[in-house]
Length: 99
Image (cartoon, rainbow, N blue to C red; front, side):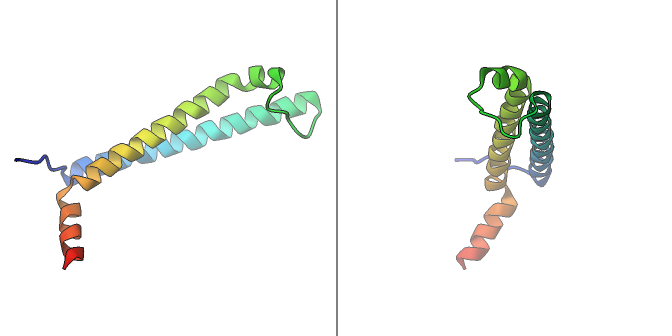
């Protein structure tokens, strides 16, 4: 049975995609944090009750963007792991460790 082997270029491309997803998640996290700070500043409060409907309405867009970015980062990490496990280089590392 023939197995598909991921090339080094495939693994590198997946690694770049994962890095881009990490950057997007960091940006989305920062945007959400800024939205939380803006909400607190407008209300003149130090702490936020996350169950507050006004807070949820105010930060909904950035929160959903952050959750989506987290999901995309996790998916990119899984795709990278799959490419690594299917690469010839990984197979060689496993063989060398088995010796």
